[in-house]
Length: 193
Image (cartoon, rainbow, N blue to C red; front, side, top):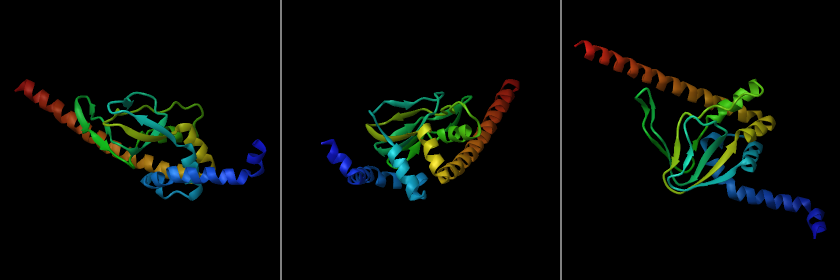
C-alpha cells in the first residue's frame, strides 16, 4: 500500500495543495494584510495557519501576556476590550468579524528577533474575548519567522504595518497623556477652588 503512495508522490502533493487551497485561500485573500503578498508567501502562510475554536465568553488572550500568536477571524465576533491608562479611556471596545486580524503585536516580536537574538516576545496591550462561538486561524511568531526567511517581502510589509500601528499608538498615547494632564489640572484647580 505504501508503494502506491510513494510511486505517485506528485499526485498526493498536488491533492494536498488543492485541499489547502480550497480550505484557506479565500480566507487568506480576504485579509488586507496578506492580499498583496506574492503567491509563494500566500501559500506559505496557508501552510502555517492553525485552526482555533473559541466559545462565546472565552478569553483568547489577556493584557500583559506574552504575544506569540496573531489571529484571523474566519467566523464569529471577537471583542477587544476597552483600554484605560491611569483611568483615562484610550479606546472604547472594538468588535471584529470575519477577515479581521488581531494580536498583531507579534510583528514587533518578529522584528525584534531579527535584530536581536533571544529577544523576549512582546507583551499584549489588550484583552480579547469571543463574543460568540468563533472560528479563528492563527500564525505563531515562529511560523512568521520561517515564512520571512523564504519571503522577505512579508517582513517588509509587516514592518510597514507595525510602523503605522506604532504611529497610531503614539497618537493615542499623546491624546491620553493630554487627557491625563487636563484631568490633573482640573483636580488641582478643584482642590484650590
